[in-house]
Image (cartoon, rainbow, N blue to C red; front, side, top):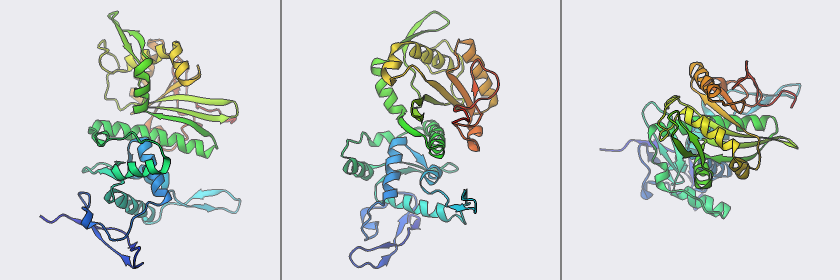
Length: 336
């Protein structure tokens, strides 16, 4: 059976400078003899995409477009910039063409499933490229890309939160001093940051809070905001006495014990901090907030929904519900 083919954008043969076109498979990576004769060298933006995919562990096509192919601004007479809508999918097509090349030349891997966003991972040539570029060892294996659909969904939602923080920081000229992904948190904290928690049956467990991400954002010369990120897709129970499983109850107790110990300050260099949880809807949010307060969780615990992130500034808009507080709050006051 003949594989479906896709046309890639025109490239230039480095020996003849003659534009050439090659058709590549749609459903698999091209074999070496199917690749265009032109030499492919990643652009600066390609390199930034490869590095971001390594840092975030995966990115969807739309997330890559938002990060690296923004619409051009239009300046009004008063000097303010207004975002111009993408025209006829031009930006999207350029992005997809670059991603297609990075995939077929082995810099990226991808997962395509019916009715789901296309997801990109790092691949072998991308690892080599980053090691040559940075001189650092890139800790990646092929098995890192072997994730279940629920795990991919969770990472996609986590990255939505991280990207929202990045865009807000850029908008307000803040500096992201530190960003740690879940894999690194797990490696660091499970070695020496264990704390003790007790369930309702008075059984003791050793654990550590394994956040989906950690951010430290500098908003002023002497002010930083360290935050753990939790992406909640409603797939875990709120309460359970079985602390060998994940639950929100166990998570709250683990964070409370971790903050109360010296281990958090030793690891992150501060006593300040909060847990920013983004969940699937208002009902789930209320239930999580109520349980947090019942367990003695205090104002370190902040909650909002993925819907609220879409058209709001994650740092400056009052979209957050806070344990033991009424109303909605902003992470950073408008005076900044």
